[in-house]
Length: 199
Image (cartoon, rainbow, N blue to C red):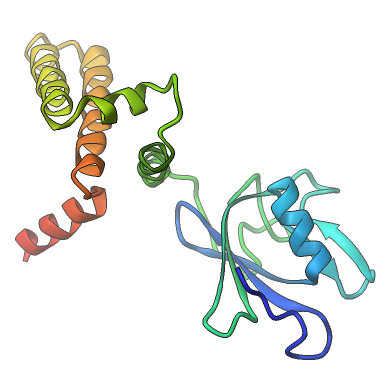
């Protein structure tokens, strides 16, 4: 990734931090090349503090780190967008964001992380991974697993076994995401289809 740290002559570029799950903008900081390199190296967002004139890892004092998920540059290569998972409130005031917005944790957003994880497995195909073995087995086998998990979900629902229902439904959703990924689709495509129907 090309990044232009010298466009403004200061050696600093803005870095926008966005919550990986909720897409809320959490804060804005500045990075020089050293701060960027440390961020990539450690997986925790590090800025260059203009007041302290030194590198500053977010959370080094509070423990409220920003764990990096992805980094991308804008079209001019002079601004970064960093998607991160915050550990606790982001602002020094104790607010969730530096704009005093609430950013409540919602387990629903984990589905995006799961989708990304499964897509990464498909791209890398690491040995010893169950997900890799599913991709290697092909469409028919993956579809069969979806069918098996669907049947087990129905059985537990009919038996009024709520704990097992949630367990089997989770297995069903996981295998469905694998099938979608295998066919080149994602949960976003399902959301698009459902949104069209909702109209």
